Image (cartoon, rainbow, N blue to C red; front, side):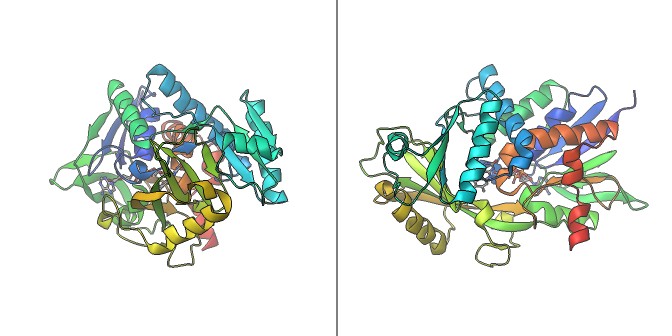
Length: 388
Ligand SMILES: Cc1cc2nc3c(=O)[nH]c(=O)nc-3n(C[C@H](O)[C@H](O)[C@H](O)COP(=O)(O)OP(=O)(O)OC[C@H]3O[C@@H](n4cnc5c(N)ncnc54)[C@H](O)[C@@H]3O)c2cc1C
């Protein structure tokens, strides 16, 4: 059996999941290069919601969502804490009939997979689940009890550990500075300490850094940054006396984070043409905490005023800024690129935790067998080049 050598740049959820799925093939020899620590990039700043349904990823990709949820649930079952699961349930609010229809479909799909789900129009019942919600301007809400949120960094470290158990290598604090080419084909890479490595494939899993690494391959990876600004609120009275579910409105979402509430503008409500929302920035300049804009907290407080007024009196305990790597159609880039030997698994935007298991499973299969799944066809690099 011919050995295939694969170098992965980036040790976030995308790189570690891919490394793990590749390591299930006996003839794969895998090395991950991470310039910092495992799961410390946008993965560390993630909310980690993997809900059985919501509006963040269209129902067309329901199987991707379900596979992601079930993968992490099993990971957590195997070893408690390895995926950082907090089963709070999810409440998705219907603000108009169109959203209501999407929710009803999502509930039916969750039930078809054997999970609990209900679409609730009884407002008293909605308030039982979330006492601080204002139900006046809503039609109803979908509720799934079995899901919640996970921890992207724990997941990445679990994938990394499993990869090592299967013989894969991980080099942390090792920055890739050059892609080595021969006759236009990428044949390896060079790291900051001057070492060169030969590979059959190099896979770029650097998320928000992909334009920089893409330049090393000589191409423009079409991802933009959207500002992911997360704010942590301390509710009045400090401890909530109920389980705050993952709460999804079209423009924002909230979830519990210990005794605090995490709130963030939803990624699909970001406008790639608005310089306040999107641009091309340097991800290395993001501070560990803070760095947020007044605009986002004002926007979120305005939203809370009409939706969850009960937590509006909260104090702001901390905040952070991160960049999501988004494409023009808000779907990832997966697989081959115009440069032979250089593949990309990036542009996961606001859904990388949900999408990484299914996308990495399919990309690993492509690398090891040459077979493309429908997901690889849907999320091909070339769809974005043709539209440009
Ligand atoms: C506030 C926020 C909330 C989110 N909420 C959710 C959610 O609820 N559900 C969901 O599914 N997704 C969510 N996301 C999205 C999700 O977190 C991302 O899509 C996902 O983490 C991206 O993973 P990644 O591995 O592609 O990128 P990253 O985690 O950023 O990893 C890229 C890695 O590449 C490394 N790197 C870069 N350049 C080099 C180099 N030259 N050499 C070596 N290493 C390099 C970096 O150090 C980094 O560790 C959220 C994101 C944010 C910011």
